[in-house]
Length: 634
Image 1 (cartoon, rainbow, N blue to C red):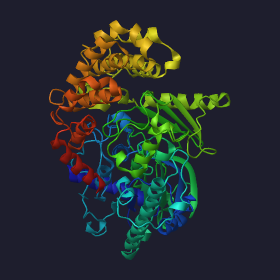
Image 2: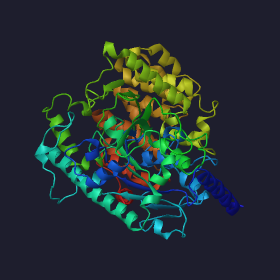
Image 3: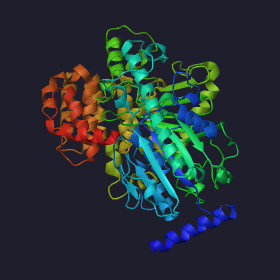
Image 4: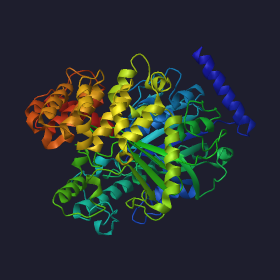
């Protein structure tokens, strides 16, 4: 049956190609991808960069001016690509989570293989969705299109890791780029450490460019250049702090270059020309449907992306969307949108600072010196912003503020733009059924026996409109809403109750004191996320008795042997955010186990990383985390 289906789909695709004057074969498709690389290339106008091979590719092909990775970190970004669906809709937005897809969904290589393609990946996968069987013909360091059957069309990915964040801090390293000539973005302090890290980042890009040239020469030597569509892109912005992990343009903007040989020009978009620049807004969710379009397959309706070339090219979007959720061991909730000129961020946890302590991020010298100078009071705005609580909304004009440091959200003349961007983001969350408004623990608990995507589309299980309304109210203290939040704390939906408790925490001592009775009752709520949010509010702003009772609730929830990993991680985040107010239970926290209930292997180290901040963390958590990071870099 399966073989019959493959042959049928291949016949359909070949028939379409024949009708368009291409009888020999479907196009081969080669992807050259790399890690942690923004548009710091010569062909994007960066004069400090040295990228001759990619510049030549751009001179022969089409360069996309504005491509967003949807997520500013690898695993959720790659999840958007492999599925064509926003990770915020499949519950897979949290870093290194692992969740099931609905049975009706497929990863894009499955479609290509059914159409007769030989599909290889060399070598990184790093998805937050569980991979079905039959995705790749081969996915390994040895995967190569040369292993296909004679005459079989191929789709092949080669991924380079030299530009990964870890490569910025790799020592010893002899710099090729002069640190004195690097441009320091306005949000970074100008120190020798920062200049060296930026220079080494550019060195790594040059090394990657050499690798890209070798792959392209290999294709030409095999006599395949005229039969192969080539894509080049990075998986998100640079690995420098405040680029990677942050849904600013600096964290989401990636280079995208596409070369289409003459014989396949009928698949090119209207604006295609050698050395051309496309003004079309493109995002990672668009890539999977574009691949299907290139081989003549109509993308399924469940894919969120829009094909930007091929037989089924769709109208260009007006906006791109991005997000930030859990990054390694720390929770956050940010959504972002951009149009041709402006970037808009909406913070649902503005009380958390931008630069929450991430063990891996703090291995970079720039992060270390940046935080040290802030703690010593030696920085001025905008270098200080990263270490401080966030505004509810941010709006930036990319034409006049490339570093995104001049927030226009309060500008009277920009209110129409703010309202338009705000409305677009709100509508996107509703249309795509953003399940990320649930805590990670609730995504798992509500999805028992089903997938998060299916739960998100069941209004009885996920009343999105009222949950989104609660989250928007809770996160915006300027709206007041104290009485409404107190009422929402009694709602029949635990996500609404959670956001009500968060809203009281954000509003501070007076709000917590006036809601003391309701918050105390919430300490025994059936939902762990509600208990944790209420406990943090009382521990932060309550009296001594309230604090002691709340801390006991948090320490109990933080025990990963008695609670699922997302619950324990949530509680540990709350305890860490309390700072000195959790001092009385620091010994109890340090004694907590670092491992316990089953979790995706790549999450096993996160509990131990936070416990280490309290002087604890069992040794058994370190090895899996180190191995997971090593695999991720491969």
